[in-house]
Image (cartoon, rainbow, N blue to C red; front, side, top):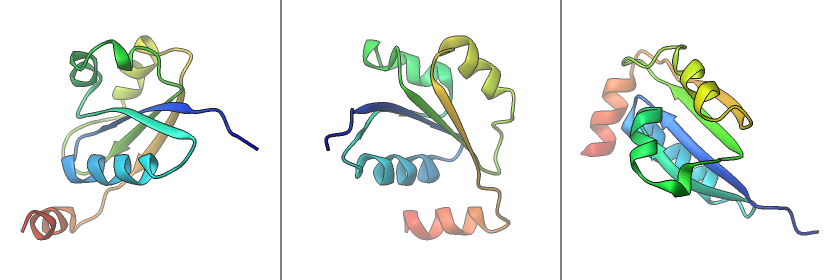
Length: 101
């Protein structure tokens, strides 16, 4: 059975988290990650390819995006499914430093 491709946008206030989520999702046969950004505005700068995603994944880490981003997503992409991921961990800064080397 062939599943339809779903266009996915990933938004996160933490670059490493965004890239990891994007890579994990891109590894799925039925998902096409069309944009990764720190905000709705940043994703829109990327071009028309991001105009109508099927799914928007918003990953909130510990640095600044707040729940108001959901309003931005709903206004820009009202027909897209919204998935929220909370990744608030005390050691996120240390993880970022370790990944960056």
